[in-house]
Image (tube, rainbow, N blue to C red):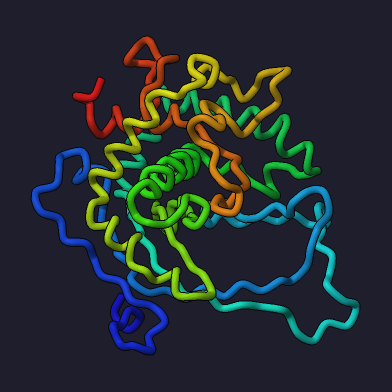
Length: 291
């Protein structure tokens, strides 16, 4: 962060590494570092629009080439400027250990669960958008894990940090080249984006993570939620595993992928798992005693 983060009043970005004091073994195994982002700037510009179906966007830093599919309409025929706004806010960045993610991904149960999503992704999601896997590769189990965990964290942190759940947004990083991480942030045009509640909550991130893992174990719609198959012929939700409005789905203004690519079975062991060998959850992998 040298040369980027600064505590000066006119700085656009300020972040500090969260010091950890005797963290639990599972935290040390899973988390590489946590950054408390005390100040950040976000610039949003309207560059075009689509009708009916949202434009397909990148997942976790993966390059995509959508070609002419779902093409964005321009704002004007002769465009010289774009409407934009600058917001300031705060956030928390959680960086996961890449070796732990790689070891978890190599487990047979995770490969089997990922294969279910990959099949539904290619047969339903891509075909409905006129895409193929060369244009938009499957995001992989790490992205679905971090995205699902991010939604659970937003729900947990909103209960205490002072922000509503719809005010906290996410950015998921899940790529072997750039690493694995979750950025939770809030930014507004007024002063509410820098109230400090999110950064203060970040100092207790270990307890929030533990509660998020525990929340993922059970849903009010179980066992129907936990047993959902992304390849179900009638319930066509190819990007959902164990995910519904009772557990994983949040406000679409908070989610970077409009509540797609979610599965809490990759986060924690659900009631649908009856054998340890069939458990693909990350929580069981980093904390074997929980089983």
